[in-house]
Length: 274
Ligand SMILES: [Zn+2]
Ligand SMILES: [Zn+2]
Image (cartoon, rainbow, N blue to C red; front, top):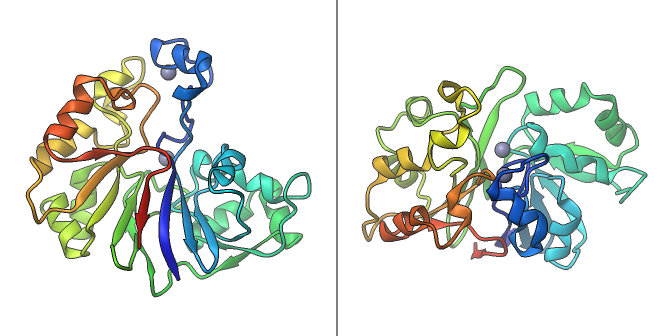
């Protein structure tokens, strides 16, 4: 059904600059709009247009692909940064008619608990639809799942594209999916392109927070597990970058390290045929 994916954002939920950040990472981005980055989202092109995640930058992200008529929304989970654009489908903005929302049962229940979002369904701006089709396969992954579960999405076509923006740790995820190494798992699901959680370069970025509770594997850890890219390996493209992540800067030594090993950093506007 879909024949192309556009990466509509490469940043973590809060985007870049992040609200209230006075550090160098965001100071420059507040001044220079070229350094602004949207939270992660995908545009799905085909006979219909779909989107994965609805971020606070939804308006700009749809504009990036020339405002196609939207027919469906996919959600990986319900952390705020991935769903806060839902409000834009209501009367005050788009006032959409029966756009399909595809998400898991627990995400559905969680969304309906909130009056502001429940109204969108009462008014039929959005309607729930199946999570999973012949060509889009949700794969559950562990990610702070007290209120709802989290899924990666596997898009099948000419390329098989695995979208995994958030998960807690490689030890939990690999245990959960039954593999010893990320590459074994990616090969097993036959993904040849992986858009992968690259939230933090390392734990030093969280100097002011509890570093033990970082709910994402760092890019450094991931690089240790995947090593250098061999010819048969998939493309791995790091996305969901926190505002502090040095991978936002193409001139950083960290960016170079990723590139030297044969892997990539996601850039807004990147396109992948399906
Ligand atoms: Zn996220
Ligand atoms: Zn910042």
